[in-house]
Image (tube, rainbow, N blue to C red):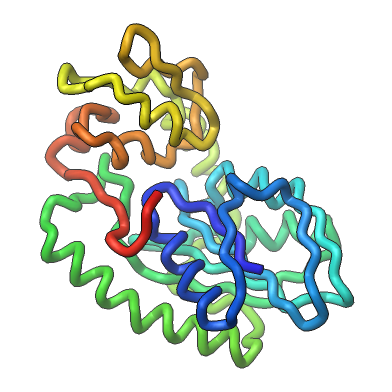
Length: 250
């Protein structure tokens, strides 16, 4: 089984590519309660983006509640989709799974358009398309590594786990929902509230309102808004554009 968390489609696409290669199933962690039963020799794959150099909160919470039933130890791997670095994702997942007596056999990374638009510019569709085209060859190599049961962390440009000491406080500050704002173009469609993975948004008087002090900071609400009415921070997201992976629906 391949499980994934995907805010804008990159990880979903990679998960589906891997599942198709092994005649397997790709399932969103948002639709899976954490109970997994594997057949003999069935693989367990985790595909996830990288948030603030670490596992996204939804992925982290899912792995903490994971209840795996399998004949022996399955070949278990994690794939990080990222724009620059997979950060500490491998060590994050490895530590959580060790507590469950699950060995993380391998890690891989796939470089794709970085959807953290407070910093990264996705307004050039040709450049974004080239990035996605280049990712295809990387995904092929990941599939080859899984097929040969490669061992070890093969993620590119990883960071030491000690980085978490610095990244965690800044991540907590960045997750404050007071940093989001809504422009007048909002039509009140409610898509942002329906799509939020941590139910941090409610529609009140036909406008989104953040009802939690912090969210997962996945920016799915910003990227999925049909009118691009949701912005974050000091205005860069507006000029940096929206993004959804062109091959899948979120």
